[in-house]
Every structure is written in C-alpha cells, then in structure tokens.
Length: 368
Ligand code: CP3
Image (tube, rainbow, N blue to C red; front, side, top):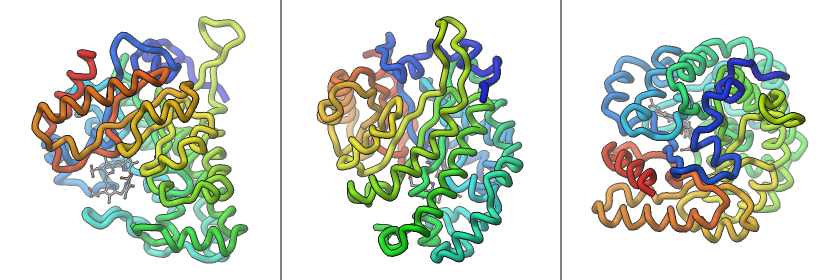
C-alpha cells in the first residue's frame, strides 16, 4: 500500500531531520535525542491537563492527545515527539475490557488463559474492528504531525508478547510465569494468541504511519523475562508479523530512481541484553538498549552495523549535575562506536524526574 504524498517523509518535511538521518545510519550534525515517556507524569503542564481526564479518555481525545504529545517538544527541544497513547489502546479499541489504573497498571476484566478464551478473542476483537475504531488516533496523529513541521513524530505499539503477557496474567506481573507457562504447555494456543496480538499491534502501527508518523518503535517491555530459545521460537515470529504490515507501507522514492521510502522502525525491549542479536534479527533500523549494557559493547556484538538508541541510566536523573553530565558524556562517547546513535534513556522517564534535568540532557546532546 502507498503512503500518501502529504506524508511528512514523502513530502520531505522530516526527511532531513537528525532522527530520520540517524535511522538511515547517518551521523547528522547533532546527535538526536528524545525520551521514552517524555509526554507524561514528569511535566506539570501534563498533570494540569490530565487532572480532569482519565488516562484512556485522554488518549481518545484528539486535541488533548496532540497537545500532550507536543508539550515536551516545546519544553525540551527534543528531536522527536512520541505519540501520547498507551500499549493497551489498540486492545481497548478492538473491544477488550481493559482499564489503566494509576499505581497498579493495566487491569483486564477477563484474563485470556485457555484455547477457548483465545478463540473467542480472535473472533470478537478483530483487526477489522480495531481499524474502524482508530479514527481518534488518526486524527490526533495528523493534528500533531501538522503542528510539528520538520520535527518527526514517532508512533509506537506494544509488541505481541508484551500485550499477550498482560492478557494472560490479567494485569501486571513480575516474571510473567502464567504467560510463559501457556507458551510451553500449549504452544498452539500460544501461537494463535500471539498471531492475534501481532495483528492488533500491526494495525495500530499502520494507522499512525498512514496519519503521519515518521518512525515507529515497537515496545517489547517484558521480553527480557524470556530465554533466548523461548524468544526465538515463540515470540520472534509474531513480532516479525507485527512489523510486516507497517513495512508494506512504502512510496516510490521522490529523488532516487528505483528506491522506495519506508517508515523506519526502532525495536526496544527492557532488560534484553541477552536478546540483542534476536531483536536485531527482525531487521529494524535501530535497536534500543537499556541501561544495563554499554553501547560500545552492544555495537561490537552487532558487528558495528546497527544504529543504536539509548541508554542513560534513569538512576542518574536525580544525581548531582556533574555526576549526570559525566554519565551523559560517557553514553555519547560509547555511542560513537555505533554507525549512528539516538540518545535516550534506558527506559521511560520516571514520574519524579525534574523536567529541567531532561532539558539539560538535550542541551548536552546538541552541544556534542
Ligand atoms: O514513550 C512513550 O510514551 C511510549 C508509549 C508508552 C506509554 N506506556 C505511554 C504512557 C508505552 C510503551 C507504555 C508502556 C506501558 N504502559 C507499560 C509497560 C511497561 C513499560 O514501562 O514499558 C505499562 C505497565 C503501561 C500501563 C500504564 N500506562 C499505566 C498503569 C499508566 C498510568 C495510568 C494513569 O492514569 O496515569 C499509564 C499511563 C501512560 N502511558 C502515560 C504515558 C505517556 C501517561 C502518564 C505517565 O507518564 O505515566
């Protein structure tokens, strides 16, 4: 399927941005920087807007979602916006009964645990139903991309395993044992479950790309709980499927004959140092690295060929300025070992973060 001619990458608006260039494995004149969860609890202007709306209501209000997405760009001067939404939004829009409870996490009315549960979900909460409900998301993305001009918008989705882990557990869990047990005890049901969550992830990504996202990130927040073998056999095929629909959205390259334009993909999983090669095997344009693994080591393991994103340890955000500055300098120096580097945290912005500290990090990245 064709991207529209007005898409920010096709029309050329975001094509030369530092983020998009880094995702093409180039070294732009300044290191691009953004923060996972930059739109959210650490900003007073966010808390003021959110105080009158429930999280999921805010996600489905295009003007509000767009405004919240733009807030950190205005405040910090980051090189990309990340769309304000949540990994459970596609489940909700497909019809699943889910709520986000502050302090607890996603809570599902009915956990999905048996072959019959999975079959019912696949029959009832279909990708088609999701597609028809994505109007507010498309509208929010379009509003935001128009407002951002040359700054790219990053769309995202939860990866199939992370969504499935929540569905099987019925809410947050530490080691996702119920989900991992289903995977090992009933691999056929597991495969059906992941094929379904992969389709919902794919349709959520597709809508954001069509509406104007210039890059997307697949968040496999909980993949770190998997062994290499379990990831490879029971999870990687579904993540590949989630990305395939997004990858089919292309456009004949406006400047280079025989080339096509495609929206670049970032693949990220927390605590996944042992899975680095597996995440890379899905052929993303960049891999996100959490704070546990130094970027120079990550790059060496990937043969020095993969653009990397990360990986400031969130624990340094509350440290004295000179301690934080030394850490950021170290991350930037190690990032030089990769073909390209997008500065970010190793996981999302903690709610108690002083926003001025994030602004300072942007200044440090841009100063080089
Ligand atoms: O960088 C990004 O902003 C990407 C999008 C993203 C969000 N949440 C945005 C968000 C992603 C990938 C998530 C993942 C997510 N959401 C997880 C997985 C673990 C992880 O950290 O990766 C979980 C457990 C959730 C569930 C969730 N989201 C809860 C329980 C809440 C709080 C509910 C409330 O009423 O505030 C959220 C809110 C949320 N998700 C916000 C954002 C920007 C807004 C407020 C915040 O910063 O917490």
